[in-house]
Length: 389
Image (tube, rainbow, N blue to C red; front, side):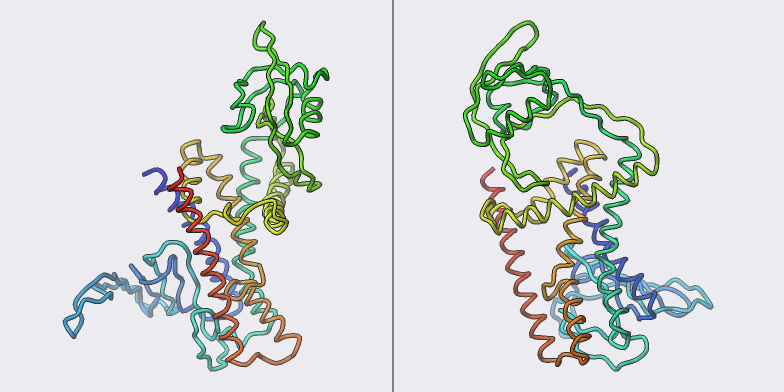
């Protein structure tokens, strides 16, 4: 139950913030918003802004005029607010929770809506810069959300100051250090006969030995012991080099920070969030990582459940990281994504004429096929991991 609730909160917040960006941007340039949906159809509940009030509708299976079962409105009610000027926007909660969208007047998108009349309130009637502002607003909001979360956590927790003592504070499960029997509190004395006096010494010795057998001496209480273990490896995000790791963390404590320092730390953490994504893509394209390692909704749900059980700080940190992922993915120039719409708009601005309707629709369909293939891949990976575990 914790995993389900955490997943709903995580995805709900990220989707809402993303679509809120598009909604606010549309309103800011005078574009009429026809529908603001959290989730994909079929609709479950809607409330529509109408003149003199609000109209609520609830959807489920019912028998239609032909006596056949069909999905549609089963109950409707209204709230009267005399004198209220309605916008006509339908706010919707839909059945499929993995996504959402804002439907605005006069837009040609993956919904295959090709009808527009060049009315002042239609998106296609706006300038190219205004269209790009609308298309990029979701990405901007997700980036802003990550920055706000990281900044808030930095101001709340403070700055982590790492101890330079070569003492193990934490071990990563399944990594060489844990497998070999090392424990929290063990003090590393020597690696390959080289004396270790600080955590910097320890890091230097291990980093230069990726995927190698390492002889290590440590003390546990008054007892001195020696073991041999094989190191693992990871990429250094700063240099891109492969370094050795054994899965241990040093002692550290948090020191209070000023608001300005918290903002700076939040900005750096957001930048690192995007850097991790770029590094992951580099590893995929270079063959250092496999496409089978990509995760989807099931992996996100598992991570959401695990971090929620660990506390609200890990959970919010995960939310910020996934918000960075969502922003990065959506800004890619892939048809069907926000970046794809921006790319088409830029092309039209350069050639100073709109692409033909046939060309735009073909591009959108290709994009949807690519996205569908990606979705199938990550779901298959998720299921494989689930069955494997």
